[in-house]
Image 1: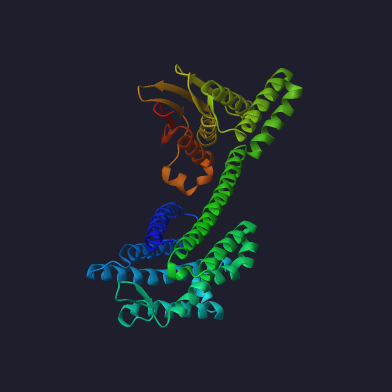
Image 2: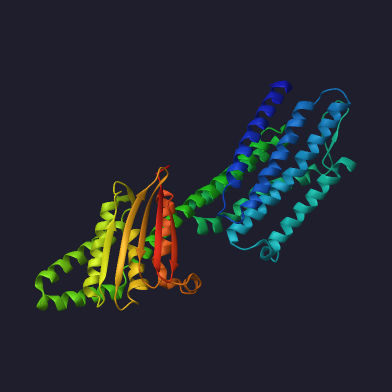
Length: 429
């Protein structure tokens, strides 16, 4: 191959590496799970600058003129300096990831401190190279001539795959065989590039470091996806717990005791109460296994079963009035019922004469509203904040409305009762 062929290949490799690095930087910058990703982002940016330096070297190599000499010197020193920064970033990232310890804890480890110190010396030599030519000088024909300490630079580059190989056992134990295999592949590619003398040709070292960083970034992305999957499972479990928590034990016990008493007193009413109780529990079990919207009429059926149970077991009269000219819409399950439950528990039970709950639906051009009004004693908002257990279902209802249909929930209370209003926007449903 002629020198011009090497130049074309080198420039093509450099441009391709820069494109890959930009994609990796953007993708990794969007991740928010792994706290140590910033170290690897520094390595990606540093390698981007080193690759730019390599491109300058290929563009101006053996070209005449002072401008070519200046570009060659700038590119060469950018390449040397930022390659060392990449090596430091990879060392810190792999070491902290393998030990699951912060950087300040690793400073006490002699091996890590020794290697980091050598890299810092290497970085110092890179910075003073333009003054004394320790690693390279620019020849008469605008070529790059090796300096007296270029062997030290090569050895320090060789320590980069060694650091990866040393971390393999611990990372395999922490993250599995996939992570260990990626480290082995990345380190092997870098070692192959160095052993084949590619440092002088500047052909294989740059893409090998790019692939090394690519494999490390892929590892982060895979672990992020695993963490997100675990978070989804945890969120689903929490969702079920919140819903199941709405079935209060003492409500179940009261209903069963009421049914027991009715069996001998009024068998027909006992039968209806058993059916209401079974339908009430079935609705809760159905919503635990589904996040789909349900027809409003189905939700109101659940409300009727619940109010019937409460009215049967309560010593105070409880009435349900329904004013719903608009019924042809859907909403998240168990959104109206918890609000009716709160109205009974915190509004009507404190009144000796009992009370009435009114459920209304209205429709506008923008939204459908559902209001749940009671004529109970109401509550004080400040006291409600101090006693969140009183309204355990409200936060759950509000969260599910927002997540499933961009709905909202507002509550207004005073001395003459409480009104909870659900707003379901038509747009985007």
